[in-house]
Length: 248
Image (cartoon, rainbow, N blue to C red; front, side, top):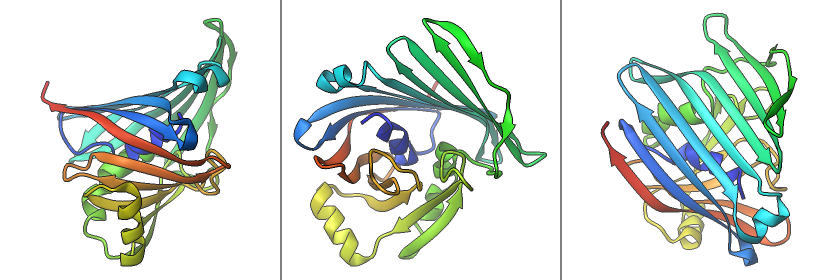
C-alpha cells in the first residue's frame, strides 16, 4: 500500500512550476490502508520531485509504521528533466535504509549505493557500484519526458528504460489499451480521462509484473491508479483527494 505511491507518480503531474497532490490508498476488503503526498518544483534550470507514502490504521500496526520516501533531483535542459540523483528511503520502526542512484550521463553510467541507519545513527555505508545498465531517466523523469508522446501513440505496447524499472535492464513498458480493454478499465475505475497501463517488471505486492492501470486528467494528473489481483484480498487502488497547481 506504500510503494504504489511511487508508481502513482508515473502519472501524477503536468508541467508547471509547483504541483502538489495527495492520494489515499485502498486495499480490497480492508478499505483505506495508506496515504501519500507528492510534490514537483521546477524552474528554468532545475527540478525537485518528492513523494512520501505511509501505512495508516491497522496497516500501520502490521508494518511497524512503515514509511517510504522517493526523491528525484536534477537539471532542466531544453525542456527535458535530466536526473542527477534518485533516492529511495524506507523507514520501519527505528531503522532507515536509503538507496542512492547517481547518474553520470557523460560516461553513461548509473552508480548505486546504500546507507542504513538505526536509531538515527549511520551503521552501514556501502560503496557505489555501477548498475548493469545505463538509463537516462528514473521512473519519475521518464513520465514527464514522454507524456505528450504517450497521448499521441496508437494502440500497442511500447518499451522505455528507466532506473526503477526492471532490475536487469531498467525496462518499463507502457501500453495504450485497445477498445475492449479500455471499456473494462472505464467500467472498473469509473473516471473520465486518458487511460494507459504502466508495467515496471517488478513483483510488487505479489502482483507478477507490477502492472499499474492509470487514468489521468487533461493536465496529466493521475485521478486513479489500480494494481490488480494482489494476493487474495483484491485490488489496490490509489485515488486523488487533493490537487494544487501554483507558481513560486
